[in-house]
Length: 343
Image 1 (tube, rainbow, N blue to C red):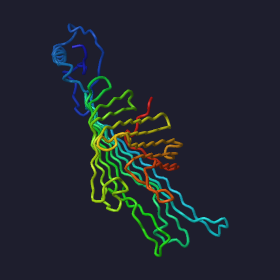
Image 2 (image 1 turned 135 degrees about the horizontal axis):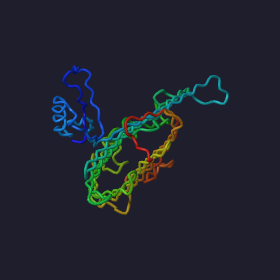
Image 3 (image 1 turned 180 degrees about the vertical axis):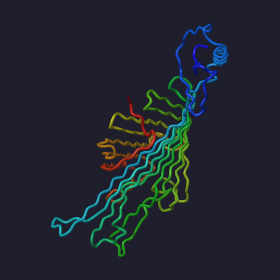
Image 4 (image 1 turned 135 degrees about the vertical axis):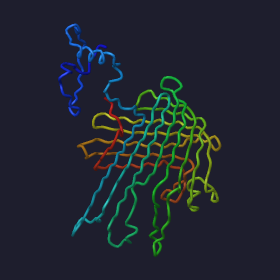
């Protein structure tokens, strides 16, 4: 017994106060038991026989396998005009984002989950325009990504990848050549909706980067609005279209000091229908923290899908590159371990 947790001295005539018992660690010392009286020898023998591990008072937290965090962003602007000679219209605009992640890692297994919900609109107050037509959406998306992996060798995992995408509310276009104006739905919740599941391998050369190759990937394209089915590649009577092919996905989640960037690029080839036509989905989120809560953000979304037909100004429908950009200055709050900075 090399460490004593109590000093026994004068045990025969000392009163014990249980409320003030103090345990202190003392370094290894050599004690001459010959100089002790009988009471002190008994006390010393008892303390020396106690196993050091049995009186270990150090507190150990259980291992944590889950890490999670949430990022929220809100950008709001308002314009009011009174007797403004140059013209214009008063408006209110809002852009909001909730980005949440929950990741699990233990031994050889990883399980990563991320959900993004974004919504934005511009409400104009232009005179002479019906109120419902003054509202237009600038952003609307629900996206969920889940990845399961089992370590095969260093940085290489057997993986299963799940993705779901749709939007929250309907989007309308208006034909002003008719009276009253004709309203046409352009998209809605689950019109379209995308669900995919891929089996393959995942390679993580760095903690902030991963490459996923899924040679066996199944996609479901759901269009609940009958009038929109042909626009998104389904037959008129086809509510759900199935695809099967190969998918490559690259994810980057990097943070350094006040700068953060997140990028997700997905390439898909459908074995069942024109595999040479590659579907492209590329999302990029970048932010620069100006203060603890004030952040400059830029988000871009690029889509190319040969099945989606978009009309030009002449009414000709054809596959086209879709691109959306949102730059905003707003308030940002993060909770938990949203993105761990690279030290």
